Structures are given as C-alpha cells and as structure tokens.
Image (cartoon, rainbow, N blue to C red; front, side):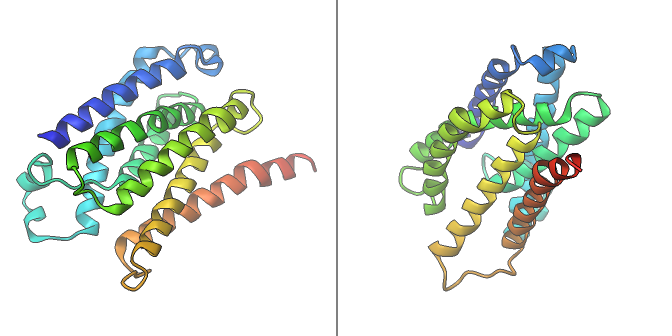
Length: 229
C-alpha cells in the first residue's frame, strides 16, 4: 500500500505545481483554455503514465506471474514501475490529447514537464525513505540528478521558454533527452560487465534518447535555419 500512497501523494503535488505554472501562463490565457480542461487532461495523463510505467516494467522484466491481469494491476502487492516508460507514455498522450482537443500542444507539454520536474525529487525522496536502504543504486543517482535538473530548468531553461527564446515543446524534449541519458549511462557504469545494449530496456531508452534529440534538432536548429533562407 505504501507504493500506492507515494503515487497518490506525488500526483496531488503534481496538480499543485501544474496549477502554479498554468494559472498565469500567457499562452494558456490567450488561447482561452480553461483550467478545468487542463486538470482533466492531467488526470487522464496520470492514468496513462501509470499504465505505461507498469506495462514497460513488465516488458523489461518478464515474469510468468505478470501475465495474470490481477497481478499486473496489483501494484501495491507486486511493485514495479518504469520511470522512463511512464514519462514516455505520458508525453505521447499529452501530444495526442492536446492535438484532438485543440490545446496548444508544445506549451501544455512544457507546463506538464515543469510540474513533473517539480515533484520528481520529492517523490523519489519519499520512495527512498520508505525503502530504508533497500532501494537500487540507480534510484539514488536519479534522485540526485532530479534535484540538479530542477534547479537548471527552473532557473535557466524555463525563463527562456517563458520569453519565447526556445520553441514551445522543446523544454519537454530537453528533459526527456537528459533523463534518458542519465538513465542509460547510470545503468551502463553501475554494472558495465553485465551491461547489454540489446536488452529491451536499453534499446527502448536509446530509442527515446535519439528520438528526442532528433526532434530538438528539427525544432530548434533546422526550423530556424530554414526560416532564415
């Protein structure tokens, strides 16, 4: 039950950060997007991200008991979630939902990303406290990295995004790029002798990393270069 409580607490904190970043956002105000629609989107995104995190974990750690639907959804009793899987699934859903609901896709994606960055170190810290030394080393690395990411994005990248100096959506892509890089390199150097580039999880992380990299290059470099011609 502890895992479920951590998820619920983190999600409520996420909604608080989302309200903080969204309530005075000029793009959301100018597009006349009501906050209740943003929060409805957030709830659906949270559910999709949870299922995606669980599904990714099951794929990366195939065990016979996970083929039982009751075990698959019994997260409090059979814990296991993939952070990178949840982030990716939630991000894809945000793009799809915003597109069909005519909501500014890039801007909402950035606001959701900043809200997630705000709660990530808190959620990881709570998780580490409850695990009491039984947490994997990679969780500690991501926790420390998440604090650094929070200050970098809050002090440097988000102000640039607010001023329109980087395109909407790039902030979210930069976060996914950094997260996947940290995740991959941590797994590589923590157990370099047993590390395999062909494991499902590592292949997935590399796909996420290079996809976000290509999208950033296309958005921030190629589009600006072509616009000058």
